[in-house]
View 1 (cartoon, helix red, strand yellow):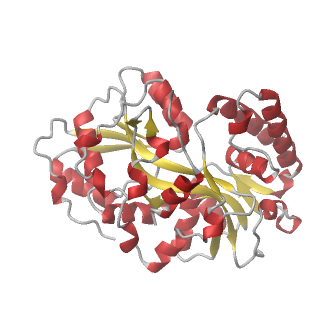
View 2 (spheres, rainbow, N blue to C red):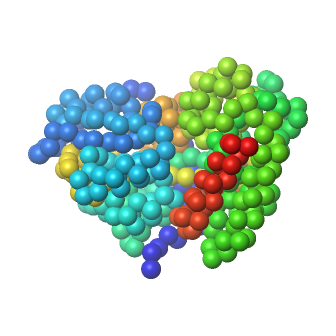
View 3 (tube, rainbow, N blue to C red):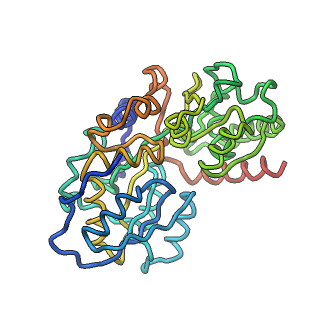
Length: 366
């Protein structure tokens, strides 16, 4: 039986655990580097350029980055390439891991090959999102959640997602349709992660339809449906939107940069996620991939640089000692808000993906 054990306590530990210049990574120089290139598919701002430059200098291994903005695109690419992948490392969220593993797209991680594995924050070394049948399937990188971001200069304080539907901000809200559909289901008292609907497709469809119809009814609230974190950042900075559903990373980055943005978890709750680097099955440059993964774990300064660039909380130990007060504050939440975060579950993903994708298309087309 596949073990996806996950608790509210583990959720809090994972997010709480992760709250410059890069240290010279002399400890990452390998004794033998058989391959001279590593191909990585990841999100924008996840891997600091300073780290890449130093890694290439120290190891002679060229780092080739392919950017993605969607888990589905990564999955489709690897599936199409089959047993001859062009990528060595991909960036997968914990709740999508089972989909990749079921399709035999990822290799179990040999943590014994990573001498810097101990540099992870303690809560992440056995992260339940990355453990399947006793095997680890990724190096934890960054943790985040779906939050409510608002411009504090033009909006009133709110502890509810209802502010997204407030007529006072008509035409001044923005969100990712598929993400906010799940949040809206939670706002309506239903399960936006579909865990309780396993084996209950009719109940799941009714909850989905209710959220879909509500978002269509409230479509006039929306300035624009966005797709990438950089889009919501631009809209908030340019004051094209005053309130938004946003990933914590892009919103926290604005706070770090001094913009008048507040990031909260409303009383109805939200969902969290964990990003990891995963070695691809039949990776063409597996040895170089492990050298890269061990290098990125080599110091808290690297984790801090990843947090500064992405805004997401780091999974590396000691990062909180490297970040400044503003950077730490951008990733901090009151305890009662932390309690409202539930990590996305890998259970019942096919039903969820099918229903959310269909409803999202209908909302957009309405």
